[in-house]
Image (tube, rainbow, N blue to C red):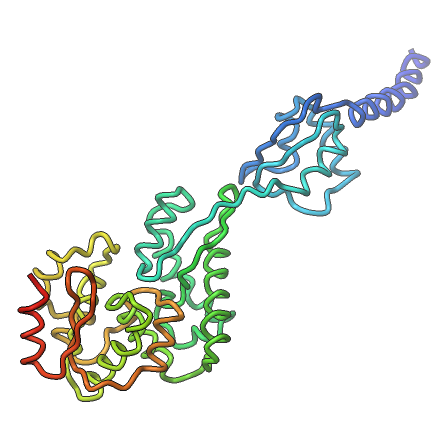
Length: 326
């Protein structure tokens, strides 16, 4: 009996070494294939994907710990790879980023709607994060110091997104970095500028009110002049924002029915600027506010072709309405 036990003790390590070597040398991919790694998976998940002995896999990973976490992505694996070669291949994901465009006149509700419809987030995740983690972003981005919301800093642009590994906070940081580069740096704006907040609020209105880059500086001056002379600025684009509407939900009919609502955003009933920006303005609209073009006009309107028409007096403005609005 003792001899048998001794023999088992001697043979067990030999058997383990043999089996382990067999495990490490077994070919896992006889053909080329695409391996999808999901968000909740890790290196131990390879046991089920390749029908491996989980105990030997644990030993292998203990002896050969990967130098980076496994990323949720799609990976192209060549044929005739063993476990070592498979794990090495998992360092190089296939580049399958998707392009997502955030439009200039969108507000935070539009962006949340876009991301949730593409299944990157759950509906309202962006709105919730904006409320709960604004202070966290302020620590990293100086220009957020006086901000009440991320609304005006989510820079409109086309972004590359990894659909298999989308992290909302990282995406927001990318947009904020973009704002820092294309607005703060390129337009040479002091991030501590006391007037930055008001200028961004005004720029968000210009963004909604005027599409033409050529006309933005004139529209900006008209709105600035109204503010300076203590007029209501009468920008109908501000009416919808307190209702948390997307661009498509803010219809002309809704604006007309709520044109006299009293709140912090309706510039027909509230003197001065809205409480916050009403969308995320482009660099062109921000530039227009900082470099507004001196003009004698106090009024403007757009015809059915979105051609703008200015007026110096209310009488001229009424005449333009008769001519251009049907």
